[in-house]
Length: 318
Image 1 (cartoon, one colour):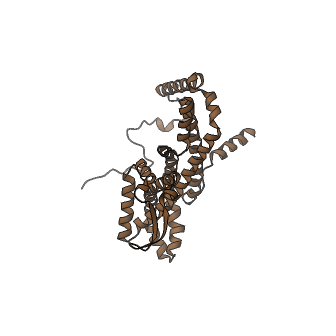
Image 2 (image 1 turned 135 degrees about the vertical axis):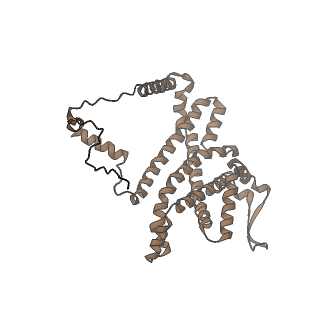
Image 3 (image 1 turned 90 degrees about the vertical axis):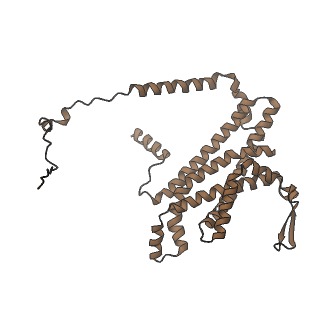
């Protein structure tokens, strides 16, 4: 018969120093750990940042006076508003169609599943610039668009040349391209919800509509929102590609201006700073929307940066 050794929680190890149990923790000397290489790397990084900032200030090639002149120029602001419009239209069209495609892909109808999969496969495979140029030249294929009996006579017809302008072609191209990515983001968010919760809701007799809007959607939004926000920001910057169609959005407009006066760098900085400003605004909106949908996962939301700053100021004042 084999024997076993059982250690009780309060028992001391035989090899342990018997003096350790009598040491007072307050009598021990705490020595701060030193990280010299970490501080050396931080100092090197600060030197590089300081050199970069010094170059921004002292290098006359940046031409900051020209930057200040053109940053709020009327032509630039009009182009900026057109860029924002393209982003809004592309986002609304893309996510509206993306919701329909995601629903078709998640349905049990094999025809809808196949059509949705084919759409996503095709529009993710074709480069965006090719899609834009295709829609911009759609009149070469179809001079008119008719609505009527399938394979029969048309009841209503419109002229493509007069209906699909450059702006309309850009919105259609951006929206259809965005829909393919939006559909996958939405489908992934819905699939991330545990199916057991739906089974429990069905067992409680909740209607399917209430199951989706009260159980599935709030949880799916936490997975959808970060990726959806990334797509909107990418679309905002990606609108610069419509400059190939001579549409006067922000990037095209600065190209026109520096083509006349030769001040390439300050005009590029104008576009860059505007892209950064609006991207930052979209990131702030994303933060608060994510915070709203986080209420279903945490009991107490962490303070916002503004709340932390205000609490610190009030604490200092006291």
